[in-house]
Length: 433
Image (cartoon, rainbow, N blue to C red; front, side, top):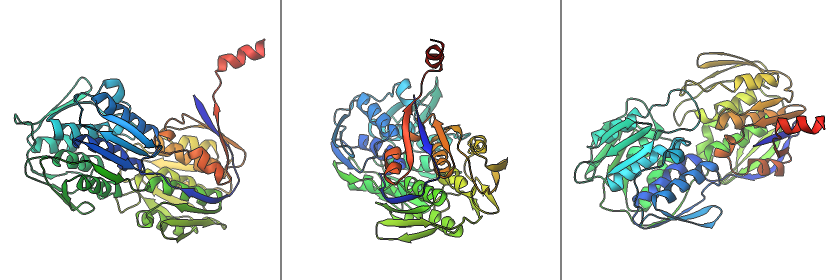
């Protein structure tokens, strides 16, 4: 068990390079199971969610070989299992992408119900609705999702209208439809950058996916996918997290290896708050020297403000002059970090999906516990701006989605390091002796 220790109050300066997108990688890697051959995938983030996905794929029979820390070769020729072990699959939300990939290629799948961060009710009914529309049969029993294709082991193209906009269901049905018989039309789909990235990956392997990034995606099934090389897009949320870190702590940082267009929704809110953001090719320069201004933020599906940036922007609003209103438009349970922020002296009241944040002049360091991935990142943002020492435990949540975050921040001048958490019993015995 480890914790992050931050001595806050130091502005950030320098340059940070953004890693590959977590939300793209955890779908693209399962997508390699559709390929009867070798995929070389570049710009893969070195995070625990990726490690878990690759471990599951290896258990299924895929051959995994790292060319370097961010490039992996996946050979799915010898995949022989379609059942994901319960203990491997239940710890990661993205395990459900294995249903679409295995069902699409082999005609059957047994995958544990997904785990991941507790953000409230996150049903997979839209996924199952789509599989069933394509002729599949699905059952949920004993903590597993069991899915099977028709007798000829190939799904059928179908029209699917999602009742709610769902990133996960959109991507899962894209995977399932890539090798289906006929045309699949998905309507009311999500439009996030990682959905476009998955479509581009599939197309580079020989699939026929059109319309990703719009309201309607059409997938004409092909008989097989070939191997190839693909590079994952930069992580929009990692970039946004460093942008908010500069906004909270002050300073000037060049954030490189980004697609600035993907950051527009984040940039717009930071500009409203008095933070300077300048585009520079495949980088953005973020600068904050003056006071922060209040603003209102509502999370929405892309191209709206991302729900995965809600806790981080809340950390910044805690220091803005005046009262800001933050509305969560996606998940039901995304304010669990508020009690932790109050330890730092933040003034936040929550009513349902709305948080009212009264800015304070200064936060003061205190111990906190990460309760999910993005909340943990937001605690780092707050800790960087707080006076004194902030300690954050349960950092395994943070390591699910951020590659080398301690090292990257330290290079920007942050006083942050990782420590092993001592056993309280050992401390007692030591003092008693």
